[in-house]
Length: 135
Image (cartoon, rainbow, N blue to C red; front, side, top):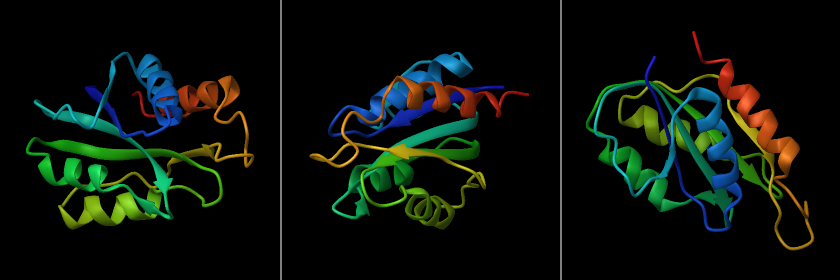
């Protein structure tokens, strides 16, 4: 299977998760500034909640995809809300992409809320989650 990992982060939290996922599936995590250039079976797409919504960079990336993607698997972190799954799913399905029914979410620090998260245990859990998609 062919995997790709793309993410957008302002704090580095999502990069930590992206790197763990990429290591688990044998690829390299890249930011959404790097377009997909070849077909993939699974695209792990990482984001975080910023001011209660999905950042526009993720929507722009989804809109820019012009290769075949078997399915998108979401991962995210947030201090208060429960992640970006619903927002990514809506944007991706509007463009005709299939989104996996399950996503990976963990707490992410914002000020004193969820301080120190994501942490090494969260990164390990993200890698274990990603391994489920290896046939």
